[in-house]
Amino acid sequence: MSQEEATLTTAPAAAAEVIEQRSLVAQIKLVSKLLRKRFDERARAVALSEGAGWGEALTQAQWRALATIYLNAGCTQKELAERLEIGAVATGQTIDRLERLQWITRSSDPGDRRVNRLHVTDTALPILERLGVFADREHYFADVGLPPEKLAQLTALLDEVIENLSA
Image (cartoon, rainbow, N blue to C red):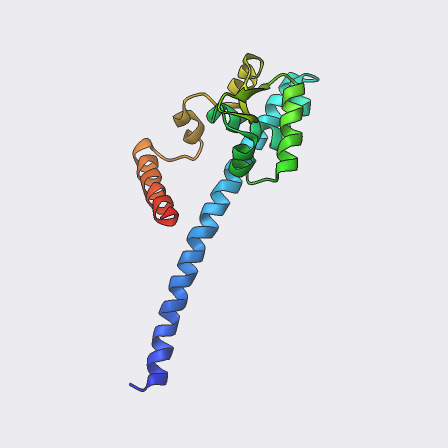
């Protein structure tokens, strides 16, 4: 077999491997997008059921920030921005809005006066409950339609991918 023939026979295999890798990334991105979309729909439904109450003001940025602060109690504004993958200004505006609604508080970090720690207030707990954020995580992820054993397997595989990419 000539070098040209060898290249032609291995090129499709290499291309297929790249496509599979892209497919994994595309699938992970799509799953993330669809989970956010489903949660947005739930947030909208909660807002509509509440009428002119708190729900009108609940934007995607706000529910994502509120849920992230709940799940990462005591995080800083910088940590929140990193987790949400948004800029410091947008994060600050969202925090200001949530604080005005009395859904979160800022408290000084005892080790560094320049740092504020974020915490969800009791006022926000019914909102988080209605959104299904702190119902046990199994309830939140049950919406993906996988039995618990398959979900555990998928989670373990994704944890392995995350660990490999973090190394």
